[in-house]
Length: 264
Ligand code: 0O2
Image: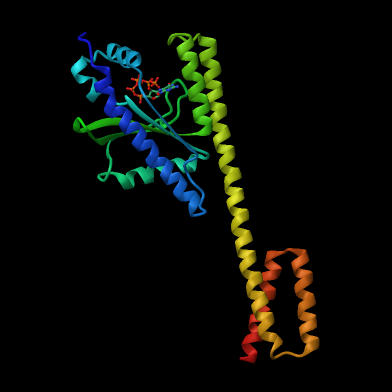
């Protein structure tokens, strides 16, 4: 194998990783500035070490001149999400950029098609343009999108693979598969909790809007109704407020709307 000029080879990859990382961090910040929930929890990036590139090229019989075309993860970006549902949102964000600052080359869905090891993650291979003092170049980068639970599993398995030099003993392999299943259930459980939270938020919004309408109706009725009638309406409102029953509040609001309509 001829001696590769690693500095020159990896320079564009360093640039791609720092630019892509910044772009996704900006997306994250944009969501937060708009007061919206960000589907991106964290972003990290790395350039593969020469030793790992050489090992992968050797394992896959890739000649030096094909390394840049065939090793797609020399530049690697990792996007971590809190919930499984966020992964689809991140994929959609990336697809929106397709043909603009990135070109999607391939997608690998290891979430639907879990690897035998237990590995789950969504990979998108992109072509990314680099403008440097050395000129224009398009390089390949791999974007891995996964949840916190998927990441916890993958990072642990990766370090065990490293420790055992790729030959993880069978009993540990089996335990890792069990852990992958536990991570899968954790993701599912978190999703149900997330749906409950979203439902509770929606109910609160509906309740706030009903209460705002009730107050509006009461204010309008004050101008046209008798004092005793208004005292009774106010009392009913306070009682229903304390009871905190959305169905009763809704019915009460409808009754007030009908009364207000009669006076119009
Ligand atoms: P590193 O050390 O993460 O940088 P393969 O033929 O499966 O070896 P290939 O063809 O590059 O790899 O594609 P694949 O399978 O999509 O894997 C690309 C990357 O996904 C890997 O990079 C890992 O980061 C991650 N990955 C894939 N499978 C597993 C797995 O079973 N466990 C863990 N922890 N990670 C996985 P590398 O090259 O392994 O290097």
